[in-house]
Amino acid sequence: MRKQYGKVANKKDQRRQKRRLTIRNKISGTSERPRICAMKSNKHITVQVIDDTKSVSLFTVSTFGKNAAAESCNIEGAKIVGARVASVLKSKNLNAAVFDRAGYKYTGVIAALVQSIRESGIQV
Image (cartoon, one colour):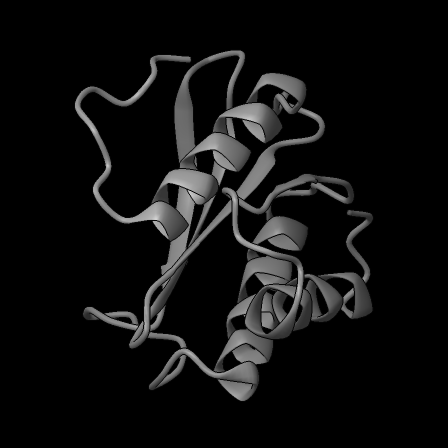
């Protein structure tokens, strides 16, 4: 995986980038177990399901755009996005996945997202 170029000015963002690279070195998605990558901001959340062996993004679910799953990036919105991700995974006959938290701490919105995916029957 290619490292970020340039310096990150914010110390909090520097720590997140370091965590992201450390996590990404250990996690890889396959055709049977794709990688679920979650990205969040203050307003929105985006979940991308990736097959790293083919370097292909299978699908994306987010809280903005034409096919928005929810309105905002709160715990309720994360549960709705997680349920939508699980339903698309089931329609593609995938029952297991690997979760990539992209350096975010496993609390709040990220934890609610994964919990919703697990409750829908996907092994994460």
